[in-house]
Image (cartoon, rainbow, N blue to C red; front, side, top):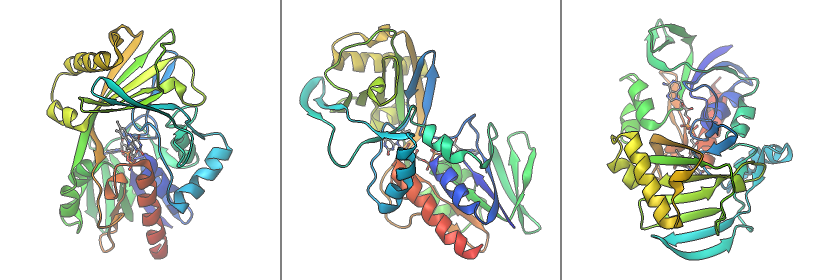
Length: 326
Ligand SMILES: Cc1cc2nc3c(=O)[nH]c(=O)nc-3n(C[C@H](O)[C@H](O)[C@H](O)COP(=O)(O)OP(=O)(O)OC[C@H]3O[C@@H](n4cnc5c(N)ncnc54)[C@H](O)[C@@H]3O)c2cc1C
């Protein structure tokens, strides 16, 4: 049986691993404590707040087919919130988010459906792959302490493009192309409350400001306890990527309070998360990278565009291609 190491247990890594497990022995390495990657949920006291991806749409038949059993099992549901648009601090549009295409979310947490996908896979958590080397025709992986993580016929890298680029040995044919893919940062402000705050919307897009998104996390299906989530713009995050996190949080309080008209600083629970590589711009060349002669491949949203559906499609298309060879 072919031995495969997958680096990363986000949606792309879990999707690739699940398909390849049909005929290969697959091991997944994930540096975090749980699967999901940027489909992430923060547990803060009584609150479970999605601080990465907020919702997703499904346009391709493949992704719709993938979602059907998850919807039937209650792991994914429609988010039918009240949607608003702000121009700076001015509310310019209010509408209902009912129709088509549906806005899907994981339930009761965003990351839950990736966790379900990872069930039954051979996943090793809390282990960062720091180095990969070829020895006697096999790929050898090492962690950050230099410990050996086994030897494999194939490796599949699914970390964000700059992190994948750092790990790829120089002889890999697509290393230069991956190095050219730029990813942009984002900050998330996570706010949990013991009481409910009345807002005229459940999800709001903000234009012409330093924040781009405010949502009432608890308005998603199957959530308890009032909580909000704010995203900075990619531009503001890039300009402040090395700023102290406490200062970033103060600025996010200020921007959000100005738009909402009350001081959000008095939340009961709060945290700020820095995403160094949150999104990527649309790519047009190929949905995955493959170096057959070296037996190395890479997939992830950044091969297509920074969206959940893209992460799934990139991994699925790569797996279909590899299954022809295995
Ligand atoms: C703030 C934010 C908001 C977003 N909003 C939306 C949205 O509303 N809708 C939408 O569709 N998409 C959204 N996205 C994008 C969406 O989250 C991604 O497209 C999708 O989650 C990418 O999945 P992936 O598996 O390709 O990558 P990731 O989820 O990044 O998975 C890669 C995994 O690799 C792991 N890893 C990295 N390096 C190593 C290593 N050396 N060793 C071991 N493990 C490693 C990481 O920990 C991670 O778990 C958002 C993203 C962010 C950050």
